[in-house]
Image (cartoon, rainbow, N blue to C red; front, top):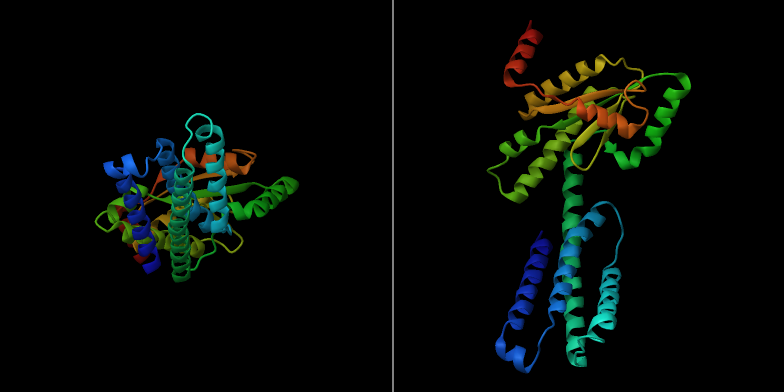
Length: 290
């Protein structure tokens, strides 16, 4: 966490220093006069690495800082060859200084992005360790999905799917008073607990998938379509009882509703239904007591 904070402070201080020096009239007139294209490159360098480095690391890509330093060096050379060398010739010392500043920005922004990605992976791992579950990423399950659809085609079986997600409005209201980082952690742990509930109430043969937006998909082979509503209602009641939150769900059946997995999800999303409320939960609990 200290590395995360220090990297942000260092990048912010460096950015303010460069922009501040560029605004000093004496330095601008007698020492340096940065070209406006430099500021565009400077901004793009920082923003692009903050946006992409963390996401790439979170998704498991192994990337090196030298890759990005080299990339921005090439970009700088292209700009020099196509613009500064032809239309706006600049002294060699200014070109070298601009290049150094761009590379420093790339290195500092990469460090921040890397720390963000590592923090994301740590929080995801911690939440899944706290609430173990059987859910796997949709991207990693493509082969298993295709195998299941192929089996259903071969034996002329139907394959119901159920999509579920927490009501985002309710989640936002529940954690609205918390700080942004704390809110992000609570949302991660809430989704992990949601995944655990789904895993506990589903059969071992069911395939539980999730995407990066907190949506879950359950493939239920050898299940009647009408039983999907029963499963969804059981999950609704348990989520409301343990988390105090509502969910939304929808169902679709292969091959009656669609012939591909993506189309099945689209149909299920169109049939989205709201989760239980407190009155419904009280009725269910009363019936269970009877």
